[in-house]
Length: 250
Image 1 (cartoon, rainbow, N blue to C red):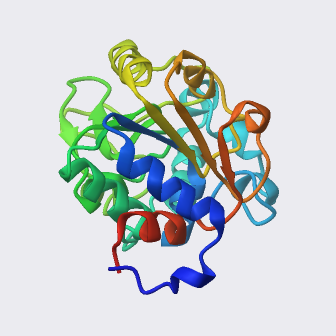
Image 2 (spheres, helix red, strand yellow):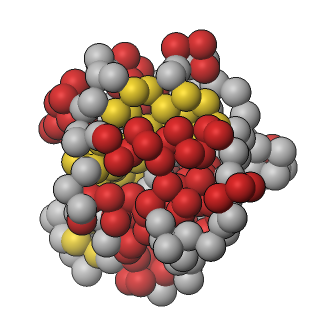
């Protein structure tokens, strides 16, 4: 059970707990803020990747054009800033996995590429931007895991001689149709959509929430979003603490 004193719990937290208990088809849509409590840096906060200085802007480095033209510099940045080893799921990931196990949550739709939802036990996860745990040779399509890429120096090369590319969606690349279609299907069927840890500034991913026509639209984010005016409940607090309370986990 949660150790938070009920008398100290904000009304918004208690309202969300009631919404969750009354819901039968919850979908969670999350972004970088879900994983920051695990030590994974986000992209747009004051200390995020987009506010640090590199030889090239992160947006440029993480583009398809840059990858094709300057693989050495791409992988230097990729290993340094995106291949983060040793991070563990936090209470937000664990709470969502618990809700799925209980049958209340039907899908996690994430913009993150860190695989922490699966590490926490979630099975119905739709990774809009791919995953650092999947890497494929561009020539023969052989699969390489996270550890194998971490242990390679410079530009990772397959035994066949082909360059190994992370299965992450770079700027200028489109999202996978199958993932998008299945994610939209879940959003359309949901009675409750919980949006957490995202500024809703990244498109086309953020545009998927327009398909929601259910009863409860909930936003959990430390800053305001473009959807605040259309939400039924807004909580500006730690998503890990909020979901831990609402799901009664330690």
